[in-house]
Length: 212
Image 1 (tube, helix red, strand yellow):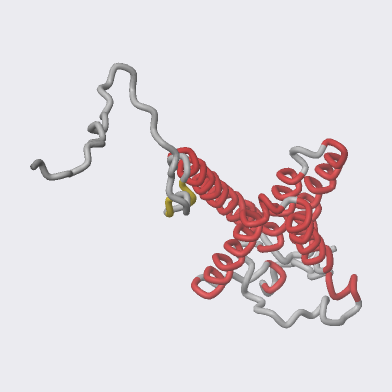
Image 2 (image 1 turned 180 degrees about the vertical axis):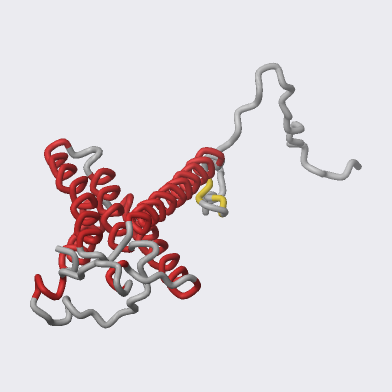
């Protein structure tokens, strides 16, 4: 669960956002990307060892014993990347995304139960295997919470701006160009009531014959 559910669950939810909830996909994608970028920066600037690497502390890494070796049991990535816990950042993101996607879908709201349990089970897994401290777990949750809130506010601001632009455009305009008829109006205009009307001078029917 520690290694396999971490990636598979998050990627499945991201694809579901793209297919079934495109309105919130950008917020979900940007939040997930931001948590990883911030996490990688912290790993470089402030590397933190997990409990299992502390000599003589009595912590036991149970992953190699449980999986019996292999790439999942003996990972190659940076071992000093415990703070914040990206496992919990991703798991919290899964819970937020599923709750947001099912807000308008009553028939699949039951998915909120496993989505809520996912970060709890992940937290138990990363702490019990001595891969993270509790403080690492809290930092991962906090990172996703801040990112989700900021990108949600950004999406609402962009939506309000688009609505404001649509409501302030005058009739007959599309974007920044004015839509006009390509044909000139030739219909006569009726005079206003009481306005003087122009009259033509009487025609001169007298022939121009010179007088004797």
